[in-house]
Structures are given as C-alpha cells and as structure tokens.
Image (tube, rainbow over all chains, first blue to last red; front, side):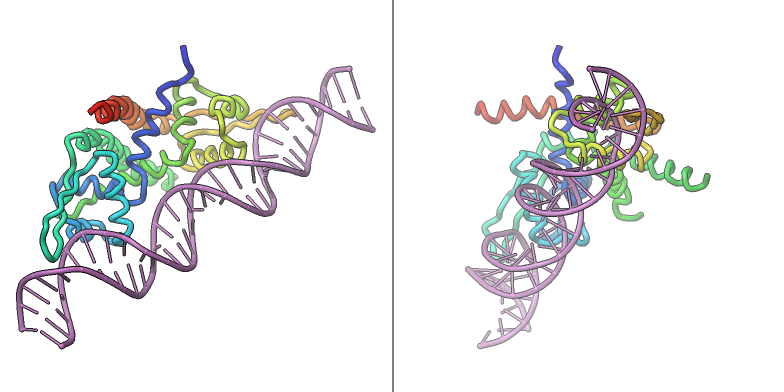
Length: 112
Length: 112
DNA sequence: TGTTATAGTATACAAAAAGATACTAAGGGG
DNA sequence: CCCCTTAGTATCTTTTTGTATACTATAACA
C-alpha cells in the first residue's frame, strides 16, 4: 500500500484552477458560452490584456478551452469551453457552495 | 439581477486551498487525524520547516485547523482539522476525482 | 489622411510565494 | 559540559505571478 497516492491528483486540478483570473474566466465561459477576446475582457473587470492572453493560453494548453481565429480585420477570436473543460464544473460548484457557507461562518465568528 | 455574484465565492475557497502544500497537509490531517509538527513534516516530503509553519499558521487563521501546544521540553505541538475544516473535504474529493480523470485524459491525448 | 477597432506582443518592473540555510530555547542523557 | 531533540525564527535569495505601458497590423469609416 503506497502512501497517499491521491494527493498529487488534487494538485493537478488545483494547478489548472489557480491564477487570479482563471476561475472567473471559466465560470464566464461555462455560464455564458462562447465569447470573443474583447467580451471576456469586459467580463473580467481589472484584467490586463497580457494577463487575459496569458491565462487563456494556459487553459488552451490544458485543453480546457478552444480558440477559434477568424481571418478578419479587425481580428476576431472566439473562446469556448471544451467538453473536457466542462468536467471542471463540479469543482467550481463545490468551491462556490463552500465559499458561500464560508462567508456565513466568518460572520458568526465576528459576532461572538 | 447582478452580474455573477458567485465568482468571488469561488476565490474564497481557492484562497484557502492554494499554496503548494496546503492540500496535502489538509488531506493528511483529514485522513490520518491529529498529527504533531514533526509527523506532518515527515508526511509532506520536501517541505521546509518554514513553509510548514507558514501554511499551518494560515490554515489556523482561517479556522481550518487547530494548534495545541504542550508545555514540554522538547516541545510538542499537535495539529487537527476543525469541524469547519472538514467541510472542505467535498472540494478536495472533487479535485481528486477530477485529477484522476485528468490523468487518463492526458494519456489519451498523447496516444493520438 | 487621420482615427478607430481588435487581438494581440514586447519590455520593464513590482510584489508575492517559495526555498536554502543558519540559528534558538530548554531539559534529558552520557 | 556537550550533544540530542522539537518546534520553531530570522535572513537572504530565487522563482513565479502579476502590473503597467507602449507598440503592432490592417481594414473600414469620416
């Protein structure tokens, strides 16, 4: 019996989800479907172009999203969640649920 | 209707879970119960004392674990998961399950 | 002809996270 | 008296992340 082989698996998911902007990007694409670059930028207030490009590239590399370039001027590029990317939804939901409860917990602590 | 109020909730969970060592520390305490500092250090190969202290302090601050000091020499300090900390388990499980599937997915991509 | 739009890249810099290493207190054992 | 143990601190360096800002191509529009 080996020691905690499952631990590294958690890190796999975590590595994909961390980054200041990835969860919000993923949730936007999951909830609102395909978006072009500029729409995403508007959906994620405060993000710089470099960071958005950056995070999208990483998600693309992991096969979580796809990138579709249209040969137009001005450029048009669309991003969508892959089927595989959709499999992350339960994690995001679990985190969202927990985060909501966490907020109540913090309030209870303060009120003591 | 407000725009994606749930996004920040995900970050709450993420902020508690990220850090190179937190998941493995939490899983160890969840699965194996109370541990003292040196035992944890052995359970998390590669971690430095500084990092372990560091991560434990942060988890304690969030009320995810408790720290119990025994007035002994040499010192003895025990760490345990709180009831509240146990509420993170579904997230860790979701991430573990996903991570396992992710591994298979990667293998499939490579075999194409 | 000059301006606007889109989806970037390039560069420099700042801040945060992680790592390496040395040091400490205090009692027990030899 | 010196060394061992445990659970840390303190300091410094490296690596990783994130920010700010300027720049580009090309067509359409006024």
